[in-house]
Image (tube, rainbow, N blue to C red):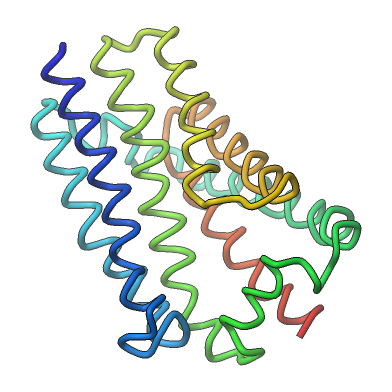
Length: 227
């Protein structure tokens, strides 16, 4: 048990570090900076570093990606469910939350506009980061491994499942470094939704679709409304 927990914790820390260091060179302006093709490279780097790390961790824990929710079972139903959640959240954000919390003057909106430079080509460069780095890799890490692997260590204990889920929600939000209450809400709500999707379906498909679609919707709608 202690060995398994040490492995799980090491993979969580290692994955968090990889998410950071894959962005640092681009944030420093290297390789074209954190824009354009650099955004695609970040997403791909996260995939080719974090996913193998998770695979190694799962092997040491005698688990597999399937055991943490990677499966094509009921993929159509799960995809529709995830898409519905993303669309509802987008409607709430762009009709109510964002307009009433600063609109274009919000720091996160400004950062998106700067990153994309009101250029639709840059949106295409961003999509691999938002869909692969966010929708796929982050869900494998934050929901699949964080919750699924930890629960598996404790023989699928319901108590551990719910405790791990609560910590996963907070860890995901905190890992995106929210600077104020509004940003905490912006992160905690979808993080909770992705976690509920994972718990409800016992698969990662719905949360991956919801996460990836939200990341896609936000850059497109922000560009249309605020650029």
